[in-house]
Amino acid sequence: MGRTLPSITQAFLQEQASFNRFRRALRQSDQRILDDLFASAHQHLAAAAYAAHPLPFETFLLAMLLEEHKRLMRLEALLNDLQGDDLSLEE
Image (cartoon, rainbow, N blue to C red; front, side, top):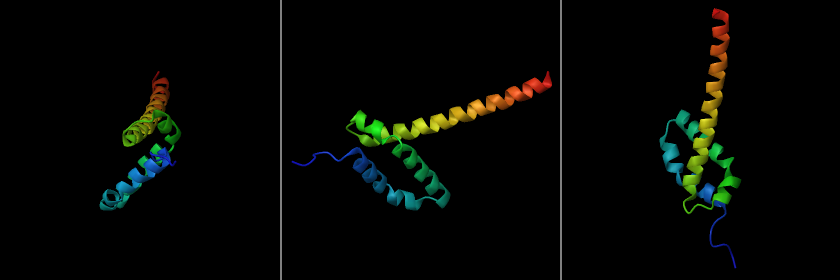
């Protein structure tokens, strides 16, 4: 007997392909950003497989959000470091 459900990688590729028309309608700069979001979700396919969520795209969105939040936290830490350097110069 074959699989009744596609693998998480197959589901991801199907979801990504379903956005092709949307992607083509975007400006080229926005297309690159959308590609980056899908790439960030792709990094978490192993975790998404463990989630076994009935709507895998929700898991992919959460993975995208996770990567964006990590980026935000790195930028905040960098900003705090830079502000800390400025504060020490003022004293």
